[in-house]
Image (cartoon, rainbow, N blue to C red; front, top):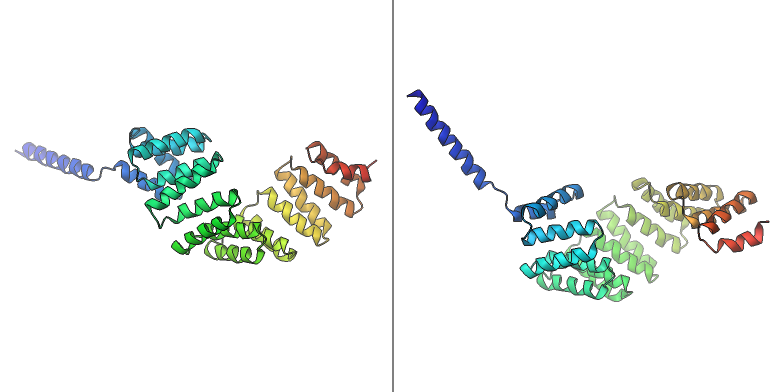
Length: 306
């Protein structure tokens, strides 16, 4: 009797577990939504690989395969796969968004704009689509349209730090530096941990010849990301204009340590060495710059080196 009762309860528990597992089964939509929401790029990739393997012929499978192809730099393949997604589901706004990004990678700007516009038609409050279309407009120097799109993205999402940063880059390009600085400052208020925004604001301060503030921003960018040779180069340039040649040499040297083929850094370090009357080191740097393809160094070699 005891054995029969035990078996009955065992069957009941097994049934309950099976029923619970069935009710908790993760759907491809659940996996895909999770992959969209995660900010961890490694987790996103793992989820997309799982979706592509388990549901290869679905819209989510093709989308995931397109994403993975893009990571490999296979942009044409990604476009084809996103197109399959759209054929299955013509209302899949993220597929249009991502296909637009691939067209942008391929420098097919008209097609990128068309895809972002379609995504906006599907969702008029799609801030990311406005932002991405703004990027393409900036690339083709349609600055008014770019500013308009970034502004719309900000209206939809007032905490969209990247849209403020991106609008700032357009203002910088058209030499409206004060507006650029205002946008960068707002982006930093929203996200104080983005090295690129500090770097961009530093560039605008530099263009206004506010070298002290430029150095402050470059320094903050370096604190957040110490491996960007370009930031060291530009901080070195600011120090040079402040006639702090020793610090300029130090920054150019750091830029060269990060990127040993940085020809312009060699050239500029040579100029700073020349200012400190170290002609031997200056000529050595100019020779290196010239051999790395920086042709302007030849004029300095001819003028100062024997």
